[in-house]
Amino acid sequence: MVRLKDIAKIIGVSVMTVSKALRDEPDVSDATKAKIKKLAFDMGYVPDSSAQGLRTKTTKLFGLVIPTTSNPIYARIVFAIEERAHELGYDLLIAHTYNKPEREDAVLRRLLSRRVDGLFITPVYRFEAEARIYQEIVARNIPTVLLGSPAPFCKNFPAIEIEELVASYNATKHLTGLGHKKIAYLTGPPAAPWAHERFEGYRRALREAGLEVDDKLVFQAGATIEDGTKAALQMLNEGVQPTAIMAVNDLVAMGCAETLLQQGIKIPEDVSIVGFGNILAAEFYRVPLDTVSQPKHRLGTAAIETMMKLIRGEKIELKRLAAEFVERKSTAPPKK
Image 1 (cartoon, rainbow, N blue to C red):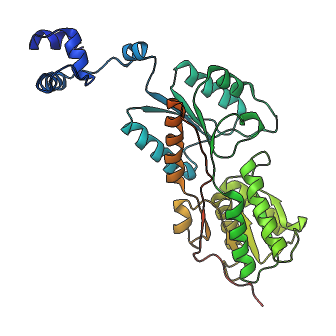
Image 2 (image 1 turned 120 degrees about the horizontal axis):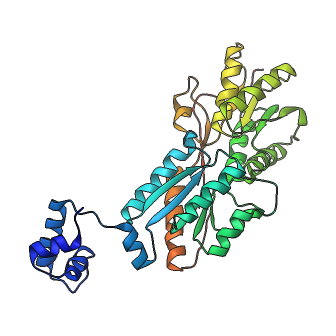
Image 3 (image 1 turned 90 degrees about the vertical axis):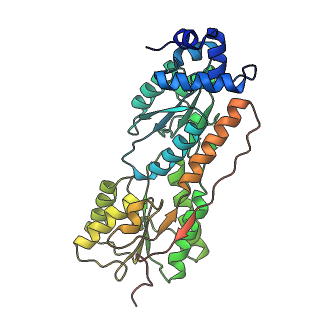
């Protein structure tokens, strides 16, 4: 292993000079810095991050906690955070919760034990008003940014949110504008605030069109393709025949659409369907999906900008990010 004293001995300077040169301190000449840096590179010198952390009381590590990378909605968010973190000299430790509170507790404690400089968390939503692990994060004063809606148990942290309600309202308004009056809704996880906001947007658009929510048209789904499949099967088994379907996200929408197509139901000729999220697969699904495009890259960028403000002790002014409706080929006026 190459050490600072090895570089110092070859060049003929002190270890302190080498250390300052590699940190770009101003009291070392540019010529000496260049010479030291070139030799360090040629010798394969790698700084001891543990030693640096002890000196600066930082680790240059961020923890990123999400449900799972298999959910495509997180791909662009993670990319944006990692890209900017790299530019700022930070590394990213990624952990998955699989939407299990006990798993979330475990991964957050591991990240705290690594002395991360900050946490980005997509919370595992629960009905309880308090969660001990979030209380511990507050007590430790760890800069933390939520990726998504806050809930009572994590209300102490700044959150980067999407205009869920407005986006869902606009998507439903698109369907009512086409003439649909019998619009089913496939709901999301019961404890998730974003799922409630999306349902509220659907409800408001119906009321504006002079329609009321029909409980027979509301089906509990979740967040996965499998959830969408189950909801569609329930709809078919109950003999419900909507002219349009709003799904809480694209995965649920595609699970539902695939089930309907397998039953010979045509999209959008027999039934229109709308998703939420605009994951890559939505555009290239066999019936390109009308959906709400979440600004995923902007969300990730806003999250790390907020994190750096927290670290610098600056005032946080949060704004919800707008999401746009994307019209493709999965909606059409209802049959007459």
